[in-house]
Amino acid sequence: MKLLSAFGASLLLLSACSSPAPTPYVSVPLADLDPGTALIVHGKGMGWTQNNSASGFATNDDGPKLQRFDVTANPNEYVAVFRNFETGVSYGSATFIMPASGTVSGVTDLGYAFEILRNDEDLIYTLSGLYTVALVAAPNIGGQLAGAGFATGSSTGDTAMQQLSGAALYAGNFIGSSTFDGTVTGKASMNVDFSAPSSQITGTISGLESTGGAYAFADMTIGATFIPGAAYEGNITSMGTDPSVPPLAFSFGETGKIAGGFYGPSAEETGATIRITDGNGHILSGAFSGELVP
Image (cartoon, rainbow, N blue to C red; front, side, top):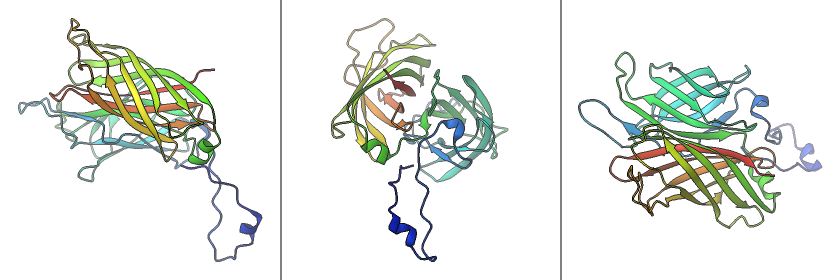
């Protein structure tokens, strides 16, 4: 979604056969979005695939992912759309009420079980969290799952981004899923200089703790660049150097990916998805969201 510049008076004189002038887009709170608005999830290829059957463990990306949330006319109701981007196969959609916190689960209209866990956030323009979706339709769902973080919302838009200047600090929460060690939570911060859009976006994902407790998760640094669509993408890097007990999940210098965007009329909020792997089946996929620090 983009913020469109105002149209000059001359455009009002277009002939009847011309297309009508589009309504300028302005980011609004999620609660006020028009029905039919599509909230596209960042990092559609940044998931994990886990096969708990006798055939073993798989980490390929050839599985269903959460593509987008479609807004409905009912308050806080969304339609989650799942598909496999590698093969073009649809895993269906599901309509549900987004919880203020916690988990919602169900089955898509094509029979695939899903679960969505919302990040611990209190934001106006941004949604982030985790999802899982079954690789096999009911009644043979079993333990074969795909999942990832998601981040989306009411985009700031490119034109509004161009009006911003100065340095900004964002702070918020991270939630992730480790293929070896359960749910991982922590904090995230991000530094942005809107006066220099070619500069690097930097930040840290820190204080990471897992529910499994089998691994230690070191802080990760963020290095990203602006891209069109009021968005950014780049890398995250593990800073773990201490031979901790339990062992470090990712060694020093291990890199992963980040993809995110800015939300609100003046980029009041941000959200992003991340994915990092050790190359041996351990994947951490997750998301963070946050707001401007005054």
